[in-house]
Length: 92
Image 1 (cartoon, rainbow, N blue to C red):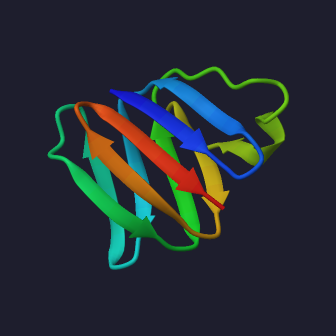
Image 2: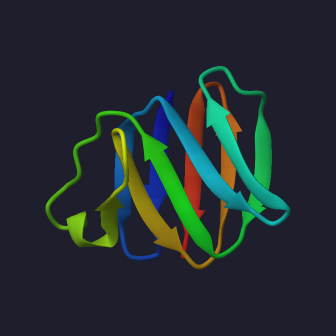
């Protein structure tokens, strides 16, 4: 599936991923390929991206590495939309 993470300053990431876990208002949830369409608010927490991703040098300092091919991004709040195997995260 295709993931795009956008902040007020810039597009932080865009590319193919295996899965993404997000901090929803009522708990963490995970999306895989062919997930049902969804729109949800996000709370402060960590976005966990699984896949072999390459980050632009300008934004690498915003991300950290987790275990087993996982990349982490801390957010304060945001919104996510999943539709047609495309996930768009608007993050603060």
